[in-house]
Amino acid sequence: MKAAKNIFHYISYLQYPFILISLFYLYKPLIYDLSTVWDNLNKVLILMGLGISLATLQDTQKMQNKLSRKVWQNPRYSRIFLLYLLSPVVIIISFGLYGLLLSANKQLVEIAPGIVVFGIGLIGFLKAGVEMAENHRKDQTAKVHNA
Image (cartoon, rainbow, N blue to C red):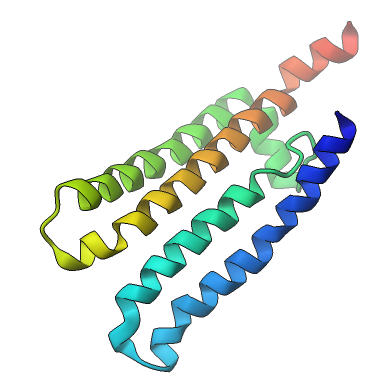
């Protein structure tokens, strides 16, 4: 199992090229031609969603920094942060599905698939947050060390 976990951890580094490419498409209309903003926005959302999805393949048992430690070790803070993460997920996916299924607005219909993919990426991010909260809660880790 350790080998599989390491493979996924290394695959998670693919997040960086996807995010960099999405940033290229984000700034491309500003630099070259503003008329392509809607096509590029859809690419940005899809590539950013894929990048975020790949980021969630990292090992959630490792702590990134001191702020993360403060948030994830405190059950109250982690619950608040998870609710904070849940809100945009629900809003973004709802908006994307509305654009995909119900909207008559041409631009919204064009970028709706990108919005949905971005929302799916955020679901993975939320799942990683839940795992971080489970793995790093002080009251839970104390039980494991005392057993």
